[in-house]
Length: 226
Image (cartoon, rainbow, N blue to C red):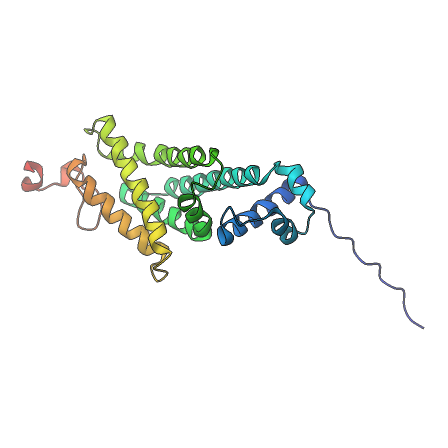
């Protein structure tokens, strides 16, 4: 005599927030693989296991889906970078942690990021402004660090250095697509070295050979004179 048949468990229904996150994750993958123009809402819906009308219900259009994906990536990048630099013990460590967090984040989004920079003419006009907002967000993290380390720098110089660092990071992300042997840590090291070499003549306190800022009380007469 057979025992009682177990009732199949019903799958838990996703909340709206969970479903939206899933759709954005899939959309970023497809945009990165195919590019904006070649991406279809049908494919994204199929990969998500939802209907195409549901995608339109959530995001309105393919343009709206792209903008939502950019907005979410911007927030995640900010959170990752901020969390990294808040744990730093020294200025050198702050720059290193921030760079490493940036490149590790980009490792997970490199294809979609490359699409945004390489296909500007086929994407919605609002995409350019969204990218600029992301750059300004990162500048808002970088510029205060530069200003604190180099209090003698004019505001415009601080802003210029922040823009140089942001531009350099973007180019390095694209360059690494053709050089997969370069790890996120390698890229962070290159940018950290570049940053410190650019700022070393403006630092309120010089760097030791280990990268530690040398307090004025520990400087040699030669360093003090320089």
